[in-house]
Amino acid sequence: MKAVRVHKYHADPQIDDIPEPTLRGPLDVVVKVGGAGVCRTDLHILEGQWAEAMGPELPYVIGHENAGWVEEVGEGVTNVAPGDTVILHPQPSCGLCRACRAGKDMHCVNAFFPGLSNNDGGMAEYLRTTPRACVKLDPSTNPADVAALADAGITAYHAVRKAVPLLWPGTTAVVQGAGGLGHIGIQCLAALTATRIVVVDRNADALALAKEIGADDTVLADGGHVDAVKDLTGGEGAQVVFDFVAEQGAENDAWQMTAADGHQFVIGYGGQFSAPTLDFVANEKNVIGNIVGTYNELAELMVLAEAGKVTLHTKQYPLDAALDALHDLDAGRVRGRAILVP
Image 1 (spheres, rainbow, N blue to C red):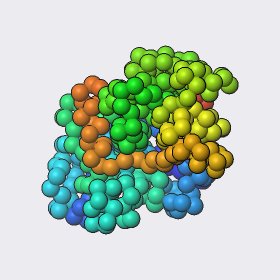
Image 2: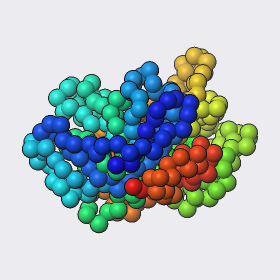
Image 3: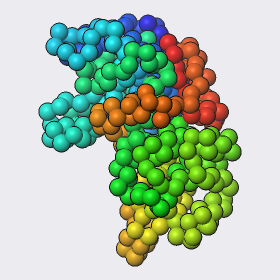
Image 4: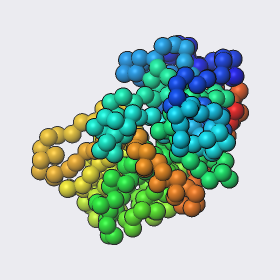
């Protein structure tokens, strides 16, 4: 089969012909990939940012946003069968550790992360995973239309869902970054809350899309955006700021846009957050990290998607054009998410 593999860092991956994955144990599931999302994390992988944390042996297949059809199952698998349409939670978990038993399976101590850890991902024709990763979908669902919800979607939804108790009517939520994750976060906010949604982005096209999908106000990130948000909130800032950028200074802009007793949710990464400790104490501000989300949250998100309340805006590429997709994403030419279709 064809697969996109990293051979060395700080270089483009290669499209190789490799053997198809096979069942290795009774709880294995082989999925025929129908769509694989291209994520900024894939760019960070190529830069070597995850090498020390995950330690994958090179070469390996990247791709952690995957949906498709069950091809084959091990003898112990009972929740899915060949032919089922599925989206895959990006981090298969054990179900036995304390985190899993507490319903926080994204913190499973025995989890692995295909496409990041030492396990092949889904930028390929087939992927081996586990039954705990499989969320069954309506058979009419096109996997390419929802694949990126497996990681970008669940990450945005997880952050919004945590913030729901803070966003009663009359509050303001700022979404910084209306790209691949942010445009999903906007729709989740609109579906789950009655908060006023203010979107900040440096790209006018992204702001236009934000208006279409639920933003009440938009602000161009042109250097005056922090003051503009303050003006929109009576000088106070927002009760919640979702930072889907968190690099190149955006992470500190988000702090400045957060009101006293407010919450800054950090979802993007790559930057360095810094704030005076007095600001924490005197204003009782909170900074909250976010990583992926639970299996149940992915299942909930798919209910919203199948009801048409969360829609991915995508640009599709054939698997052979994976390098084009990665380059387009890096250059900011992708509105929404890039999806590889084998």
